Structures are given as C-alpha cells and as structure tokens.
Length: 254
Image (tube, one colour):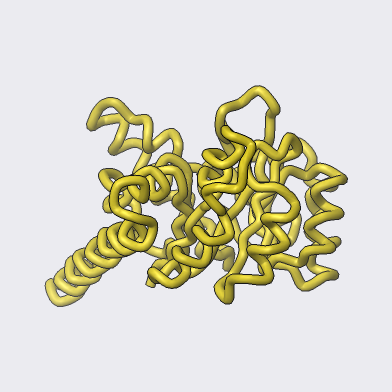
C-alpha cells in the first residue's frame, strides 16, 4: 500500500506572508495525521521561507507518524537535523532564488560528500533519502552512498504538455522505479503531484510513498485539510485497486 506523506510547508508560507502566528503549520500537521496521512514532510530552508526551527521542534513533538525533513546538505541544517532527529531526512538541492525545488539532486557530482553525510545520519539512526531525477546514473550514485531510499522528481511529468511527453516520462519513471526496486531501495515520488495527475503515478508498481504538499494545502483552503487529505488518499487507493485488478487479470491470462 502506498503511503501518503503530506508536506505542510505552505501553511507556514501563508503565515510568514503576514509575519504573524496564523495559520499554524503544527496544527496542520496534526490534522493531516488525523485524516490518515502516513507521514509529515517539511523543508527547513536556509532562508526559512517556509517552516522555522521552532516549527520543526514542535512538529516532531506533536505528531506520532513519521517526520520527513527535507533539507540541503548545508552545515547549519545538518546540525539542526542531528539535534532534532526526525524519522528521516530527504536531501534536496536548494537555491535561494528558486520559487520551489527545480529538479533532482546531482548525487553523481559529489558521491564522497553524500556518502559521508549518509554515514553521519545513520550513526544517529536517521533514515536517509535522496531527491533525484529518475535516471540510472543518479540511482547508482545513491546506492554508492548507502542511502536507504530515493524520491523521484515528478516535476517533469507534472509539466508534460502532450500525450507523447506524458507517455515518455511515465516510461522513464517506470524504468527508474524498476531499477531502484531491484537494488533494494525504498521508493518515493513527488513534486507537482495534484488531484488530476497523481492517479497515473499511483498505478506504477513498486512505489512505496508519495510526497504531496502544495495541491493538498491549496485544496484545504476550500474544503479543510482533513478533507483534502482524505480526497488525495481516495485517489491513491482507487489507483492501487485498479492496478491490482489489472495485474491479476494479466496473471490469469498467462
């Protein structure tokens, strides 16, 4: 069963726009958990444009599901992560000028650095994932670092304009998922997933988790975060069910 991890960053984004206390990302995290989310995701950026250090500590203390801290391999943030001890960290690229994460981490560019980083987190019993493009060389580099998991960047998929582009990107994701699964990596996918395009991704075999934030928080403005989470879970479960039925039919035919 695919787990849904809800990113609550943009609750903090709205709060920070006015410099006040509302809305509270900690409350959002708890409500998402109560609605059925399997995990909470937050990105502690160097510029603190989303959550801040206090948010991270309170979320860790409040929720009972897993906490996935997205972070750059930045010395300050590494130190905070080691002190806070989230369930897992997902290492992502980070640029101050970007509106949101623009692509996967280039693990190939500095395998030794990321291998050392994985070792540091493993010493504190923190699970490690890398947010990467669905490319074989990046998966192989991730394997070399001894990381536990990959999260495949689905932003290219989300931005496809034609049926051919969509078909090609799903094939690219499927190939990457298959290779990662055969090498015993846990597999997540995320970025740009919404209530229209998640169904096809949830039908792909061997995905363990989906990380979804912006679309859920956007929908929550109109229906509340509990309902927004439940609506996304419904899409995922229906996609899994149809996929399982199709696979059973194939097995019967053979």
